[in-house]
Length: 552
Image 1 (cartoon, helix red, strand yellow):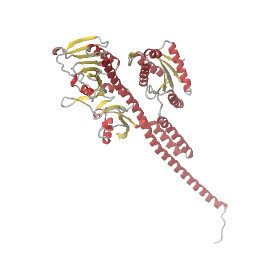
Image 2: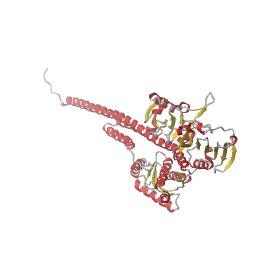
Image 3: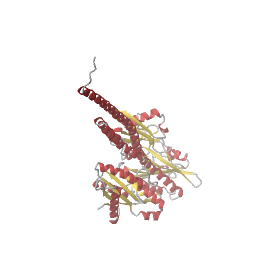
Image 4: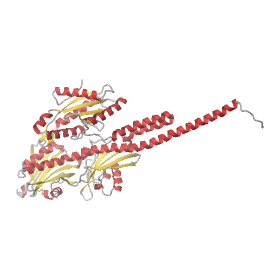
């Protein structure tokens, strides 16, 4: 066949087909690249999500455990203080009425304690207990030297400790030497010990007893001081600890008995033999029970848990995150703190951002790849921020000034983008220098620590509090309007004013002055906001102290 040149009109379709084929290949490669990047990003984000949620849950656990352990430590400290006072001879064991009066005064100022008492090796017993949350008090004095029918005396008092009833109880055969806390304390030298949970003799309610032996100068035992903490009081305390909107923190004993749960104050029931027994997790909370069962499959003896245990499981249509840690770090008590929360509550923002990234990646090629990377960076930024180890003030455990400024600036930037309100409080202890001058810096440190705990307990986990100076504190309230901030400040002021601080030298009444400033405009820098709050603090000081003032 003779050669026939290809005309231009014949070559155009071929070139166009080649161009479109090449373009199609490039688009296919680009789409595959986008999906590969998104798939890789999804995998990395899921892994980072697990790290983030674990870190967030650990933060909740650490805060709750610290507060719960501090709650129990108040009872332990009161026993140590009473032991020292008896051993020093300030309240001789031969004067049970004076000792009872001291115990009652301790019950008035320490809400964690249900009862405090002393028993000696002769069977003498001084027992002081509060009723109805501190509205009434009852004392039991057992004097073995008296006649049998006059051995036990019961005294009932009102809220002001005014005696309402005084009678003998000849039928009471109680002997402190036969109680578990007595022998346990004597067998542990000079250590403070906690009993296993048991049913209290007087109230017939489940609880724990902390006890310590009292000794003379030669080291011989004189008796035992103890304090009771009802389990219902720990449950009431856990109600104040927020774990999302549907999570919970709880405390269990090494054998699985429930020591505290926010939804159950009554943790004991009567079994078929007519005996009271402590409830198990399965009797209280099915989600916590399932988490506990999974832990027990990996750990036969719950009391042997010595580090944090994370878990992730599905129950019903919900996925949960759980964590168990020893309640008292490096302690000998077999108590475990458990926390669970739905994963979606902890990771909702990250998952929403992840879905947005996938939609944008399918819609636009190279731009979406860039956008996906940027979204990924935005998603990971909170994780990197949360994973940074915060520097704390060594005395109070609060954020120090540098850490507070850094975290507060990041919170304010996020709030500015979302056009959210924010307020700051500057808090100063009134008349702190006279406390140091009168009682010494050690007592001043005790006051600072107590104020710090009350400030931390009085704000939510979304807020920030730091020690900003010697006796000055700063609080940032993101997403809070001025009226709300004023209520928070007034609540903090009243909480500090109404309850004296128990120190080594006795109760000390302390007040604070608080200045408030609202962020205006949304991009106002932190230093300006705190400066205006400081001006409000100055107005509160000038106005007579122990008050809240809004920066004009």
